[in-house]
Image 1 (tube, protein in one colour):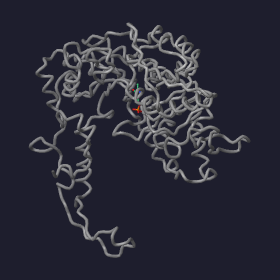
Image 2 (cartoon, protein in one colour; image 1 turned 30 degrees about the horizontal axis):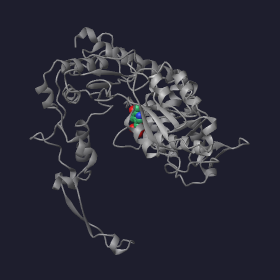
Image 3 (cartoon, protein in one colour; image 1 turned 30 degrees about the vertical axis):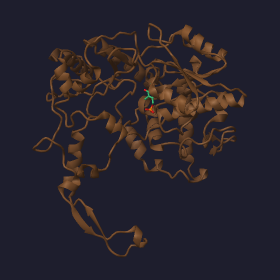
Image 4 (tube, helix red, strand yellow; image 1 turned 90 degrees about the vertical axis):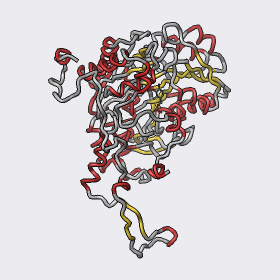
Length: 495
Ligand SMILES: *Cc1c(COP(=O)(O)O)cnc(C)c1O
């Protein structure tokens, strides 16, 4: 990138040592053969004798243990090196569309690490009033943000929130003596929506998108009926497009006696500006690890609180938290027709403490500012790249097309330019989709770096893309085996 391009950087001059945008970089590798950082056990293995005087039964104890005999500096350097072989939101931009990989501010880590936040969930309500107050306050914050009347914090992920919400919808119809079998889902929806409906015992009715990438009202009219339990929708949708006809959509589903489920993954586009509850949604989940900057990754722990309208509140999971009628304190209780438990206690608490800290620090104005910048950043980045962006105008994310290139190969090649690639090959209504969401956390310089990486890759040939990544610590991995047969113990290396 030219020096000129960096002048507009709101954060002042960039580091002189930063690699030139759009140029190849090398990820850290620490061994002579460039293979991998040795395991601690490979660096040193010491047999430690264990004393005989254990109070535990003999068959539960051992006499010796093989441990790495390393001093603190060796340990610290090992983990620092490993972190240099990885890429995360602390390393650079992470525009993984739909996932909303925002930077996780450090103050939220401090809040979660506060010893007062670490109370045993089995403690009596009387002895953890502060914790219950925080839970009730977070329920209230989330309810106000989503336009919902009641919120449970219990589900441990967005997908678990979907399952909770759809089970609540099922319980509601059942309580009304209705047997409704169908859940309608647009073809652009996230895979978890389809899985949720099927796991909850519903038949999935897939709704084709209209030409403009939005819900096709005629197709919706044709799909709804007395079998409709719910329509699951995210708004803006996974193309980043706002469903302008949302009130009409809600009318069609409600007139047929169905409920509207809001997939909250894209709430970052609306935060502080528009509320699913006001659009007619009856039940929604919040992905706090997307919208409220709590960490993702490694498969969890996450949190997927669920909000509902007044009508559905009695079906929420148990225990729920509320202020006591006389205002004297907070209590746990079981809602009248609760669907039961979907997770232990009140959910993954430290993640929720981080979400609380984030919302409390930003406040109404800060949340509205975050969504404005998220939308501005997506639109700026889209305007800077050479790849075609077929649908628009969009909000917090856009889906570019890699055109003649294979999107997955192009994504691998972006790693060689030192940035994380976008989500690929989804939604399927765009050929070779590159679903891109820069988030509000990036400044102009960082967006320009990203654009330079996109453009460098757009200009490359297939052979180069197929050989990528060449400059990362780990090259192409077997993604299917990594997902289906993960071997998470270092013993795997012994084979
Ligand atoms: C991330 C995502 C989900 C699932 O959320 P998890 O927290 O990952 O379980 C559902 N729908 C959409 C559109 C998503 O992006």
